[in-house]
Length: 248
Image 1: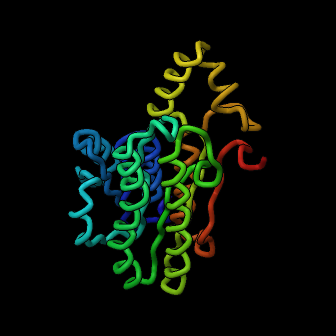
Image 2: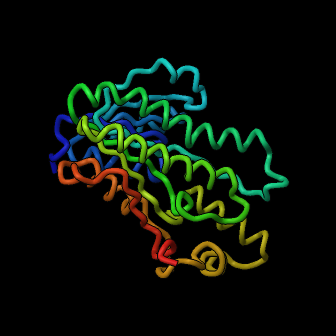
Image 3: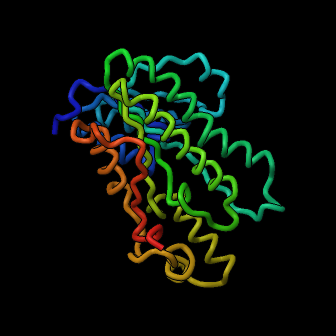
């Protein structure tokens, strides 16, 4: 595929998991991809594999992002983390960190990318949200709050960017097969005294009609389509990929 030939893309958290799958997908479609990650070695290895560029960056250094200028045609805001605890026990510092990484950082990167996108009359902003951007779960107050806020950022960007040829959308997967989710499954199994398959069926996938994890490559395929020429009229949308969870 070469539909993104000549385009540049930036993927945050791009060295592993969903980000790595997105980096490979966009490169396969012809884009030159910058793999942005705090793991410099991982970013460099993947950039070498796909013929892209590595950017080792601490996105939590938000002061450095305030003066940033991006020349990216496609921006994939993917970087994220999870922390699980009841609200009464949730560390305030962790709450602030999650909101910074998954709401403030995407805002700053969108802000840095829009002037270039506006100038050329083309841009694709793709925000890796979650079913938790549309639904809530107990013990995930910071993650749910951050993803709900990301949905709002994406929609405002869509409204402002439309007249400039810039689209902005969210991708909303359920649980994706990544190292982060594997750790959650193991932790839940220990906590509840059940095996990992029971964790998936009784807890993590309880609300899903399809009882399996989402594969990173499935998410990346949707991201690749949203970045391409056939998605020019798709903006301000939230694409669920949750096995039917949000159908309830």
